[in-house]
Image 1: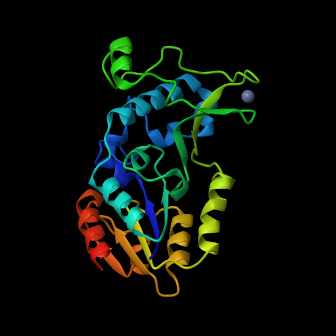
Image 2: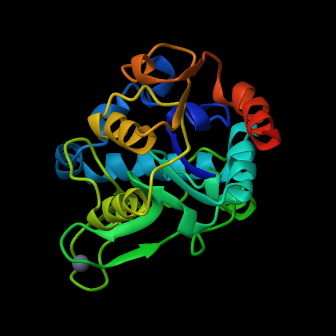
Image 3: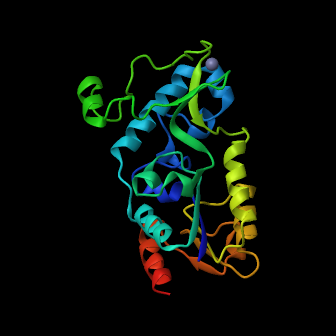
Length: 252
Ligand SMILES: [Zn+2]
């Protein structure tokens, strides 16, 4: 079986990672959708970094949930598998999806990259584990560093989080990996979970992968623009629906 899974914020929400939508997503009365922009970073890089440091800390303290585990199980059983996630956290990876089977189309929150040159590094390993961070900087959730705006060791420009902000292009090499997967053949099964599918490219990929008779399953509590195209709708949160669904699919 050739499988494509697409996930969004709804999959991580049940691990306690707030989505950008609704009042739960607000941070110090700021709308994250307005902080996650190049304009916000140009205006106040310290504020934007403080928000990302807190988000990183929250993700480190979070655990993968039943939805992440179920997707990982499906990946092990499929002949060919690709996960395209809009989530910038590492919960899919920690649930056991190998790097080569996953595309983080909106980037990786633990990457810090230069805003001018090509320099980038992954900060996860270099930063403090949660226990040390908590002892050094106070309770989890507080930002992890006092010196919040890092500078590039190569060119001294401001460094920024390695995520795709609103209004920015998707990373080319990640796009290419998705295209390569499509080029190698049609999918028998496409699951779109925990995303409202508001981005056109999500709908486009789901439809392209499932054409020629593949099943397209949407897992989302609410109707989305993709619902009309799905061959099966599961109107439940991902952490509830996916374990059952994956077990069913594996038995088939
Ligand atoms: Zn640089």
